[in-house]
Length: 327
Image (cartoon, rainbow, N blue to C red; front, top):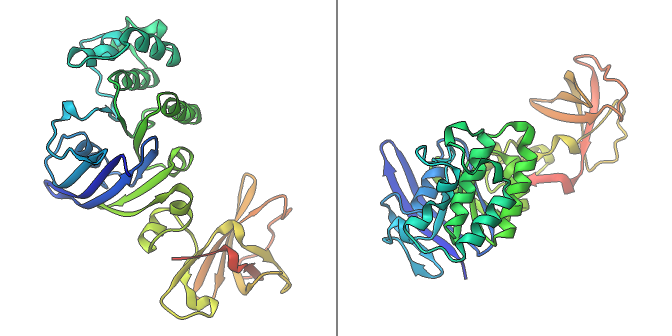
């Protein structure tokens, strides 16, 4: 039984359209919606929150909420720009939900949030005097204080200094667990998705193109479009492996072995010509031409003390069947 279900949700906003959006989120799940900017991720969150009229249906705990007004949907929404009330201080922002609904154990909840999020010293501060990280914590505190059944996060790390990104990702995971939330998190960042998500939906051009557990989505793309979006390298026709033409495959640049001799212990071995060798901190990036195909390969510097192969020089590359990803 799903906690939240979107069934054939569709809508049009100007020149943009969401088309037949369908997926389900289980209670307690950290669900990430992954896609490029403009793909429709935020519009999906806003539709769940009740901010857009749309075709299709929304269900919460098996009850349809398609026409339920936003204030009755029990969702907490943290926008990319945080959308805090500039005319209120930090404490009043957090307490805002108490103006329109009864908050159980509100005094204890406020104290708990303030302590957990480290907001003690800024409760009286104006919003304009907060850093990006402080605004984020206040926006999350406000959302959780409303005691939502579902927490919606719209690109929550976009305004955060990359130096603190890892700490903030852990912080979000800790919040999710501590308050027993069901979280939907929108991002274009694969690293965020990989670390945080129990399940991922990939959205491209207003359409959900793949949904599944994190590992299967990020390692086994459903089609060529998803593979390209995820940045898969070395995508070629399977005829290169002696199979029927038309099926595509990809091989991870880190799984390809390189040698100057035809003695690689691999299932597939090809002779090629070096096109370029680039030294990048702790590894080399090799571009090797195999007939009309060019392979991109990463090799650790500790495994190859130097990269002295000249452009046009012959070498051999190889990889195993188990490392082939069919698309």
